[in-house]
Image 1 (cartoon, rainbow, N blue to C red):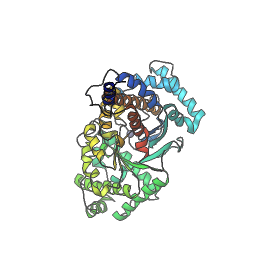
Image 2: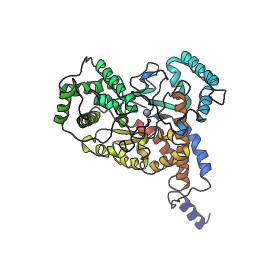
Image 3: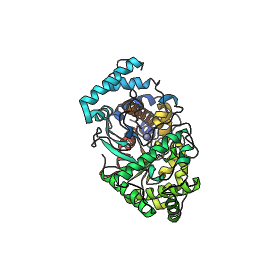
Image 4: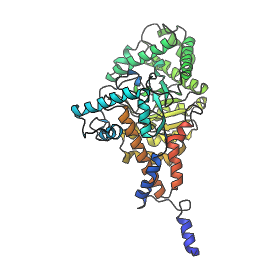
Length: 438
Ligand SMILES: [Zn+2]
């Protein structure tokens, strides 16, 4: 090799090359090499709702009637591919007659496999362990494979909720379920009625968090964006105590009074999350329901909480990564205690578009992003099983595509690409819960 050729080789290696704005003709080949290696990486699913369609504990809320985006409709042909891959579904549609086959197949497997049924699904998809974000854990989920994340919102709705419920059709579905959840925590803590003093109410909250942690919970989850604005003011304890003690045994606080109380409780839960090493998961993207308010739930509303040094020992996982404000969201991950999860985004978007989200995130804070499926049992036919499959396939293919472009454009080497893939699919999330997950 002559000297000139040697220099040429050196400067064409990624570490010396100038990056390019377009991928080269090698991008497809790089994708083809990366994808099978990505499929071999055992994953940690950071956000999911495993369970059967007839199990009311799958979530602490339910979907109200309303519009469903194209890919989430039961007409999505990808769900047939999922049923074929997971269950050997022999048909190419979900006509009522054909769907019966799938229901019968699942029933038979449930009977045969018992607690192994959902572990089998994880095995088929190469998910090593996954979060079960559920109202309560189910005895049909193997605790070695599924770790519990419980819902903490209900502590914010202890008063007469007539006005809150009447706001719109979505709230008529949500608020009664929050009341039910609060009563379950009260039953767990042997409280027949709410304490009349605020200090005792805060103690009840803390005991619930501690007891849930003893039951194996690794984090607390908020889906508060479905129920109210995520702009939180900073009231004093005295202001919150005043509202609590005036309304705990009756009467309807004004909206402003209710929010003052809730804002304090939210911050109390976040603070306790730091003290107890109980990370805080927050729904931070668009949500279901026609009345979900995008601007009132914008992930940037939470910036004042995330950048507040009083909460620097609390770890935040921003569930669904703020979509459609994903470009802004990644800059919140600059904070050492803030992580972003991609669940739901990879289902709302097709992989060709989700690739852009992932690529920008991988190019910014690649060590702060985590994978999740947001699997959910939509109904008896389209179960959590199929949505697990869709989440996994979408994330892997979009990841391989994003990394292939980054390699082809001279940003990283293929070895670095695989390192980033391990981080996103497993290592980054597992690092949040030392000794608790693997
Ligand atoms: Zn979810």
